[in-house]
Amino acid sequence: MLRQWWFLRTAGAFSRAHSGCSTSSGVKPKREIPADGLQLSDFIRESTRKQRQKAIIPSIEDTREYLNPEDLNGNGRSVCYVTYGCQMNVSDMEIVRSIMTKNGFVETEKREKADIVLLMTCSIRDGAEKKVWNQLKLIKGNSVNRRQIVGVLGCMAERVRHGLLEKRNLVHLVAGPDSYRDLPRLVAVATGGSNAINVQLSLEETYADVQPIRVNADTKTAFISIMRGCDNMCTYCVVPFTRGRERSRPIESIVEEVRILRDQGYKQITLLGQNVNSYRDMSSTEFAPSTSALPGFKTVYKPKTGGLTFTSLLEKVSDAAPEVRFRFTSPHPKDFPMQLIELISSRKNLCKQLHLPAQSGDDETLERMGRGYTRDLYLRLVDDIRHIIPDVSLTSDFIAGFCGETEEAHQNTLSLIRAVRYSFCFVFPYSMRGKTRAHHRLTDDVPEEVKQRRHLDLTTVFREEALKLNESLIGTEQIVLIEGKSKRDESCSVGRIDGGEKTVFDNSELQLEPGQYAKVIITEATSQTLRAKLIGKANV
Ligand code: SAH
Ligand code: SF4
Ligand code: F3S
View 1 (cartoon, helix red, strand yellow):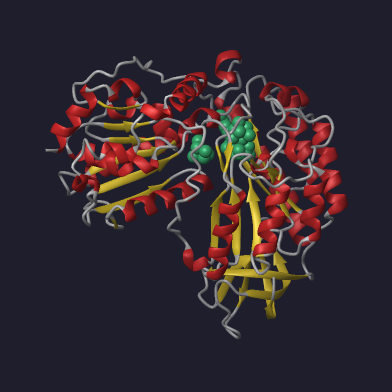
View 2: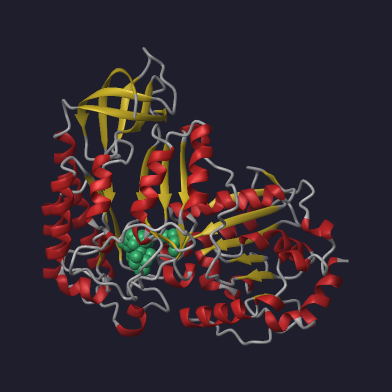
C-alpha cells in the first residue's frame, strides 16, 4: 500500500520539484548528483530556487495525501538513538527524539532488537566517519531484527549522501541536518522497501518550535541550539558544507525555552551554535544598539547589520533565569565586541569561561586557514578579555599539521599556548576534507607521523599550563554546580566551578543533589580535575 502511494509521488510532477529529497526504488532522480556530492553553491542555488517555488512545493503535510497517514505513525515501533560528534549533534538528537516521539515512536536502548536505529553522525575528520562505518557494520552484525531500519542522520548524511545508500544492506535512510521534520515520512518510505533520503539544506530551518526531549536531564544541565549553519568557510572545515548557511532562531523562542528549563529546575544552560557570537535575530522588531568587533578582525562575508545581537540575547536569557548559569559554545574570536565582554563581566550568572578557538599561533598558517585574525590580534583580544574579566578561564581548539605548517609555525602555536595559558584545549591532527578550500587549493603535505608528534606537543604544553592554572586555584573559594556522583567514589559529587573546571568533593555530610550549588575550597589540582572541600550550600 505504502509503496503504491510512493510510486505515485515519485513518478508525478512532485519529483521534478524535489531533487534534493528523493527515493530510489528504480526511479532515477531528475537531476544527476555527482558521486562526490554537491558544492555549497549548489545548495544555496537549490535552496533559493525552492524558496521562490515555495507555493508549489508540497510540505510534509502535503505528502500525507500520497502516503497512508497510518504509515507516518510509529504505532509504538521502537527507536534506538546513537549520537556521535559535537554538542550540536547531542542537541539535534534531542530534537529528533521529540519529532519521533510525537509521531508515535518509542525509545529503546536495545540496539539489536530495535525496529529503527538512528545514528547522528559527524564528518569533521576522516576518523569520525570511519567510526560510523564501523558502527554500521557492527549494528548489521549484531541485529536480531531482520526488518530493522538503520538511518544515518547529521553531517555525514549530508556529506556522503547517496554513498551511504549504496551499502544497501547497512543503511536504509539518510537525513541531513535540516530534514528531521521529514523523518516519519522517511521511515515510512524505508519501511516500504525503498531507500529514503532527504539532504535538502534550508536557509530558514531552526526547529525553533520543537521542544527537545533532553538527555542527561538528571544532571540539571541542558543545551539550547540558538543558531544553525556557518558562513565562515575556514579553509579546512567541512561544516559549512554539511550544515549550510548560518541562520538564527528568534530571540523570543530561545527565552521561552530558557523559562521552561528554569521552571523544570535546570541550573546550567549552554547556548549552542557554530559561531554563536555572530547570532542575529533578524525577525525581531526590537532595535539593539549596534556592536562592532575589535578593529582588524575580518570576515569572509559582508558584515551583518541590523537585528538583535548575541549581546542582547545573553542579556535577555540572563534576566529570564537569574538562578541558572549560562555558558555558550562556540564563539569566533572575530565577534567579540567590548559590550559583550563587559556584559559577561557584569552578570553573575554568565560564566566566566570563554572558548576562544585559535586553531594556530602562526600568522601564515592562520592566513591559509582563513581565520580572519593574526596572532597579535588574537593576543590583544585575550588581553582585553583578561583586563575586563581578570579571573576568566579560556579554552581553545588547535589543529596540528595543517597544510604547509612548518616546524617554526608549530613552535609559534606552542608559544601562543604558553602565552595565553588555557584551562583546556581540544587538539586535532589535521584531516583533509573534500570540497573545502584547502582541498581545492592546498596540499596536505605534513606527514602523518609529524602531525601525531605535533599533536602530542600541543597537548603536552596545554596540560603543563593548565596544571599551573589549576594549582593557582588551590586555597580559593569556588561555587560548584553539582552534576552527579563521582564514578570512582560514590560518596563524592562532581560538578563544575564557574570557570568550567571539573571539581570533585566529598558530599557525604550534606548530601547535596545535582542542580544544587555548593560552596567549596579547592584543595588539590591536576591538569584536568580539581579536588575540593565542601563548606556549605550556595547560590549561583
Ligand atoms: N564552529 C566551531 C567548531 C568547529 S568544529 C568553531 O569554529 O570553533 C570543531 C573543531 O574541529 C574546530 O575548531 C577545529 O579545531 C577542528 N577541525 C575542523 N576541521 C578540521 C579538520 N579538517 N581537521 C582537523 N580538525 C578540524
Ligand atoms: Fe568550521 Fe570555521 Fe565555521 Fe567553525 S567557524 S564551523 S571552524 S568554518
Ligand atoms: Fe561534526 Fe558536524 Fe559537529 S561535522 S563537529 S557533527 S557540526
